[in-house]
Image (cartoon, rainbow, N blue to C red; front, top):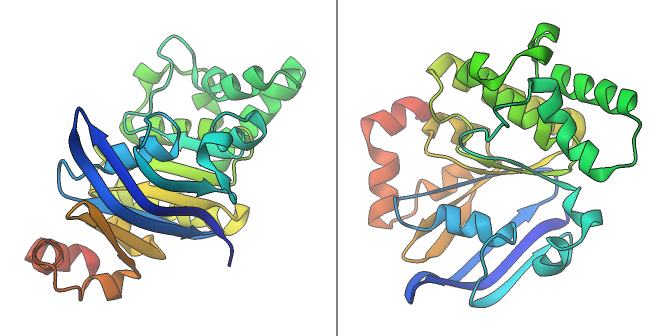
Length: 248
């Protein structure tokens, strides 16, 4: 399969403090790639570098076979990407349907009625009931907020979706349902998913994972990475909680 993301020898720093030094990562088209790491290892910094929200000091990031700095400044490429932020980041003054409409309105090539119809379809696609359309974010549960934000991320038919802690704050049942939704969308829409997570249970749906340690990344299938001898990786995956959640 084609690599939809290629990161080679990435160097990032904040105020002179090195975050990543020689980090390599590749994501194949149509897979779910999970990113984990300890606090302060730069998971969000890496995500922001990929999205063009933070400059990087060395190395290369290619997306869709093109330099990421071109991708993130081109609407034709940007509409192929969707992002679900950790909090959902819905506009509090807009209802669910209006929130989902925002990217389509920004695109500006659809009639109002067409925009609403497509937004409603995206809402149903992520499993939200019809009556959710007119509700404000403050009226939604945590799980419904995540689904509404996901629908907005898919509004322009993105084929690459970034998820930042998608199950954080959700109860175990809601988290499991959200993971199953991601698997379903991957299969039905051919999505490529890059997911930052602290949820050990979510790692089980990933085709490959990347663990940020020592300013670099260790990558591979979950079963392979679990065998890595690095002390942090061993501790992360060998605890009773980890083994119970991953079913090992």
